[in-house]
Length: 314
Image (cartoon, rainbow, N blue to C red; front, side):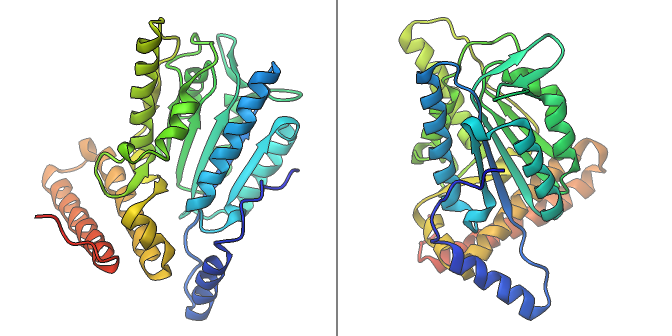
């Protein structure tokens, strides 16, 4: 199987330091976010080149926020075969822990036969049913799938689950035209305007809303009938960090404050999980737990701001 695309060794010392600290203190190794990027067949040279460039760019962006380069896995072109993807998923099943998170990105062409969605790759395609089976076997409790292909909406019903949010470039399998969503998704990971809550972090939810709006703007500007309508299913997208800048980037560069960022992400995921259970809970108990998490989140953010020297806003 092809190795992950090289992304530089700038984070190795930090990751090693955390591992040594965990071993010395008797604590478990810190939770990790794994990023899997799959780029399929282009069909035509222009599309193949576009998909390859998008996969490389996304891999580089993921590399900037991953704890170490080995957590970013990129398979593209002739390497993105069904067997190679299956091997990677089986490897992750053995390596990942329940506290870890998995983020899977699909770039390329998809198809829908009225029953199942398929991701078009060299050799046998990968069906949404197969992807679901592989993902279910991975112990990471937090999972995100971002399917940016044509007909990607048809994969949602197969892939969504209580622990997995799914973003698709189209709302159904009937939207079969090549999508512009990936272009604006990548743009959203580098544009501070996507950071709607102004905390210097761009989450998957913010990137989705940014790309969704940009796609609509694109078709309006081109005076064309929109052939894609992005869709999000699940309540955990706000808990996945995809980009940092400003004070958040400064904090990520320091091992002490990076741990605070990890704590903040975990609190955000706990809040999302609690909100999913709201209808099942006693209202007073729900309010009490939510207030506790929100206070902890505010305290963690205050520590981050203080560590990087940012003054609180009046």
